[in-house]
Image (tube, rainbow, N blue to C red; front, side, top):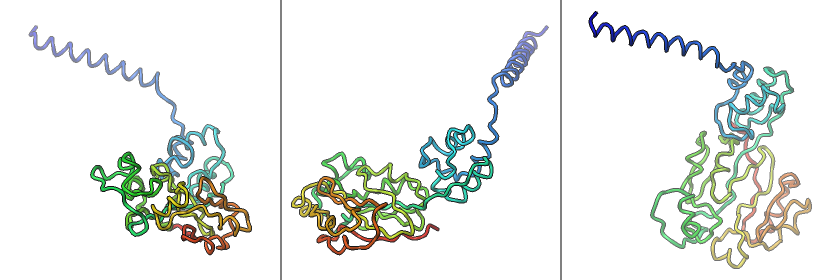
Length: 270
């Protein structure tokens, strides 16, 4: 018999045996499909942001399916519609997603903030922060190179006059920007509620802060004394608002000598 024909037969036989082996292995080692988890996954927006506290949409869907959590309202980007859809699939009560939006707590824009160096390198907040805390005198302030802009899947963030600004009408509260900001300047605030916000995170003493930024909190405690609800405290020379206690009366804003506190009402998300 022709040696070439023999080689072809041998190769074909090996391929047939290997194919049969793979077919058997796929049956033996097949992973059962969790149909409930897949149905839940279809309801989720697919942001994989981790705002729910799990590894992503797949992790949250699996946890709901396995009964590891019964909270149907953990998906902030999906909102109440997603919570309702999950409830219909799982038979669980549809929880209420409290509408939130991210806010940048800094007013260190090009007019207010002093600059100490000219940064030349990769335009990244995290990278620039490695060099003396960034180009601005205030090492706590927004660097303004847009790391948060890059991770936002909803185009809700832009850089205006050297600092990041977030559009609450577009923000989906996925918290990706919160995790990304190397300065920890971005926090979540409730939508459709009037609250006071300290737009500063500077923890230097007042005299130092005044030299670094015109709108930096100097820790004078006038806001603490003015707040009748006890919502404001001073943490390392910087005021901090407890949004649960804040009534949005605006007295702290009126008393602040540097304009570091603003009273905001975030709009309804689109």
